[in-house]
Length: 410
Image 1 (tube, rainbow, N blue to C red):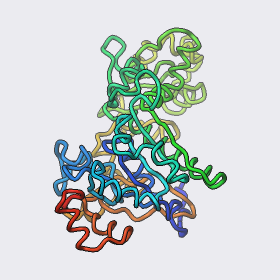
Image 2: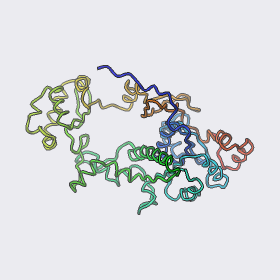
Image 3: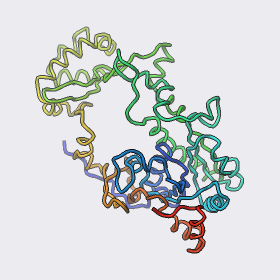
Image 4: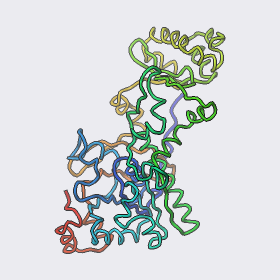
């Protein structure tokens, strides 16, 4: 079967062109949200502390052009305004910017924005059309509202860690910041929904997103396993709490992974790939519940079969099934299919030259995404924003720099 042609020849402007976002966020959840808004055409002004900026700018190596990989991952296509909102002049500049702003995103601990006088209650009457997104560990209400929290802790507290790891091993966190990532992506949908609601009502509103809420919502079928049975699903390592055969297997020359939990997929594996129709009719493996009950024996049989041939040969036979090679990051990111989908792109960075960044998973048939720009250096757009958006002259900007209200460009 030949691959379909790419029909996504988008020519319309990006869908969020004309939307301005003030971004008071840092680390992952908020920056990932605003990065996607920027991809879709919004002007995102990243408000940063003149003394160092986003905490991730100088995290551990590797880095490019003096910026840590962590910062580069979540801050493309934004403008950086390094300004101190604790000062009267700094706050006045932010309030002036808010006059033309559609969305404010912040992920400080609850109460911090109130200290700045920039909390939702202080702004909602001055800017009644403003969409105000707050991301925090435990939400703006409830008994834990004032506590800090990072992704791994939320994985632990939500029960997510209890599902991960080998059956006889310790609970295990996921290496990626899944809770932060899911919260960031959910926040994009919430903001777009609030913008649609504003089109009808003419009013803005606050969105309260908690990492803990997101972690619990992400439990999905595992949560319903407990709510339906009252019991904890058992950890299954590389397998699955119920779906079988879902697991890592070793071919003669390397690992592959497959997820074949339905009768149809299992039958296709046994008949089309393994040429073992007897495994379909065997009473031990006939139904999903049988395969789950007798999983160790089924896995032993499959392991013996897979190790007889090279991985590439098995995967050719399994092209019509959900199965693939277990790759390193390099093998995945340098693969032909990732290149074909534009999921790694090259941008010009002001201090590092050309760097590669991840692409966007969003594809519209009519609306373009904006052309990617490198993550900004700290305060890179101070003069541009203050001149073009607020009409300040060079003397006024120099005075703000000298008094430490805004930072000097790196």
